[in-house]
Length: 191
Image (tube, rainbow, N blue to C red; front, side, top):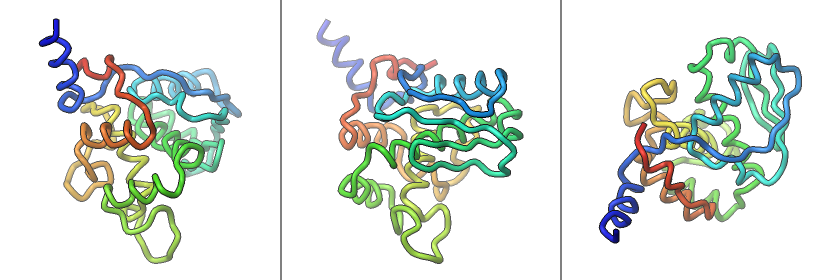
């Protein structure tokens, strides 16, 4: 019994997180039934506990051209959601920005910026590319580390990709410490 428990705990740092997530308090604005289904499927594909976000998030769907987030709001482009599973990582990424806005504090952001190898946290200065921003690396890592699927459009293609800033297991362990969110046992089971 102890050996089995030790094996499960050891696997927390080795196996990818691919089980379904818990939580997430969100409401939709302007989304069709199909678009709501796509967003729910995306968030449920992740093993991240979206319930860590302490406020309800309004998910707006429309013809925006690009997806974006502000505190308590996510804007998703209708055309992107029409791509189905391809859009899932972007949905996760934008919701991960809610963790930044509503959960992280300056000390946690500084630690994450350092560990993710970012030049700044989130657009404090001009001239830095998207991938040099800690907030963008953070959101990309949440999307990849908690749904490391071959279907994930954020799957790193090179070591310089935002979602390759850390190994998924190391990132999940760091985030568990930083946010106080344990890796769920269901995340230890590879699907």
